[in-house]
Length: 123
Image (cartoon, rainbow, N blue to C red; front, side, top):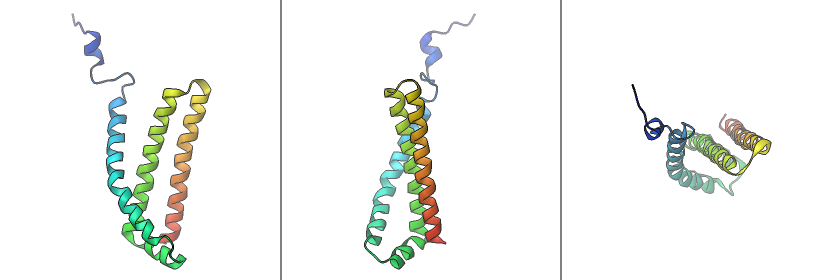
C-alpha cells in the first residue's frame, strides 16, 4: 500500500502545475530585457531626430534590426504573461476571459506591427 501525504502529492507541482514554468519564463525574459532595453534605447535615441534616410540606415543594419526584433518578441511575451497573471488574480467571470483575450491580442498586434515596420525598413 502506497501512502502519500498531501504535501508529497503537491511537491513540485504548484496549484496550477505551471507556476514554476511561468516564474522561470518571467525571470529569464526580465533579465534578458534588462540587458537589451538599455542598448536598444541608446540605438533608438541616436536615431531619434535624424532624417528619414538616417533612421532607415540605422535600422537597416543587422545589429539594430535583430535587437529591435528581439526586444519586440521578449517584451510583448513578458507583457502578455504578466498581464494575464494580473487579470487572473483580480478579474472574475466573463470579464476575466475578455481581458485576457484583449491583453494577448494587444501583445500580438504590437509585435506584428513592429515586425512589419522593421521588415519594411530593413528590406
